[in-house]
Image (cartoon, rainbow, N blue to C red; front, top):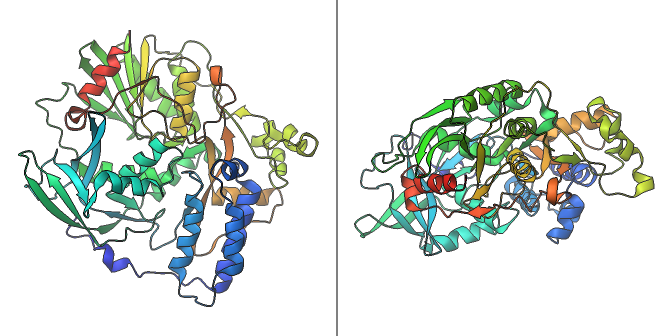
Length: 520
């Protein structure tokens, strides 16, 4: 695949014929969408000292529209405005030819910690990549001559990470695989890595950036179509995760790996029994909550839990970019015999959102939407999106621990907050906190549909397949942290475990031993 895929250099000059009229219209529509509907706007402006509406207005008024061929510069400016939001939900989606393209080099780089400092190693290679000299576990010291940790810090400064931990994790996740629907290609045509092999010898490897057409849009849309208004998903990270899952081989060295066999379920999870220093523990890894049918997913997970050890369970959601909110929150209820309080959400009070209360599925928010002038409140009342009817009777009877990292986002942020706020069990973090994605996100098509159904004509279709995802309802915590936002803050781990080299190469053996030890 690697040698057959075209080099990135061959598509750098691709463009689309946006006219001056198109560009002005795009600015106008984006101003209206963000100013009138984006739930986090007043908070983001204060938290990050930004003014995206003014930036869009300046672009609308001052861009040199006479140069109609300069579409790429125009789109880059738009994208920079959205990146400043530090909101992985609210993103500009680039049109064809970039929408389905992924830029990649044939390795994955991850990090572990030694004496408190990050060490970067190659942990996966592309299926079929035939450079046998390059071994898994090779340490990477420099990226194009720049110390790799400094390079990742520079990338983190322009990532969408809402907190420092999330920014670094996002930069590392997208280091060698980049979805071009959400980010422009890297500047270089090839990458040169300086490495130290297992013998301690310095080696240099060069990789050409190549591109692959990876249409995951249909898969994402099919999973969401039944409950489009209850989605919380980082679509960029989902695309990246799916590409790595489908095309990269981890190559775990089984002779030192934890001795257990995993089964898969619904293409979004794996499960089994792990033998740890604390005894046998059930293990459930959930890669995504992007499921086709929530009830079928929950029924299936309940059956899985019944077949695992009933005293101790580890749920691992590292890297999970979210999906359908009820699929995560209903799973939390399977872990407790007491009724849980799910994270509630609210709209932002604006003249444009006021009419949403007249739509049946949003009628809970009608009273506070109708009273927005009298109350002067920024947000409506908060109500949960999840109901717990049609749940199986089974509840896991034992102790449960949750493993998170800073790539956990969206529905997984809801899941972590509910898990902690309802005191299900300890939260073990390989990072300090989750990614801070506290919102229900709508696609632009959904937003236009709902807006126009109540007579709002302030937004309309974007040209040439340009897309937008918009955070529409904001979530808050329950329990002891009741009222705190999930957005930007995320949920803190109770205890930290920095990943080891054994974790990266030998199937998380140290992480699972550590987590099992917390189930006392």
